[in-house]
Image 1 (cartoon, rainbow, N blue to C red):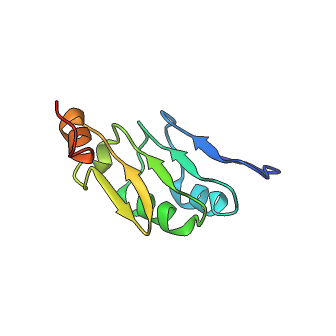
Image 2: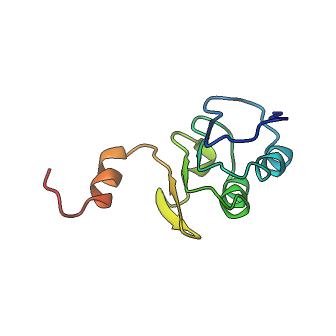
Length: 105
């Protein structure tokens, strides 16, 4: 996926895109200095590439990865290097309620 000549991209969604070469794509996205949000839901991103993206893109604050089968065995919501990664699969409401412990039903 080429983003040549893109200078100020803050949010990128590749949700539902199939056959992404995550190794080369991740290298290209690290050159986006203002990228704060990345949406990779319904893709085949694996845990290694997901973590690599979070760590290597300095400006990145949030990654949304809903319904990514290859990530379902990893923690569903976690904070890595000060960045939030959201991963929802089967039990969305239970996960959401754990994020807001002071609220009732």
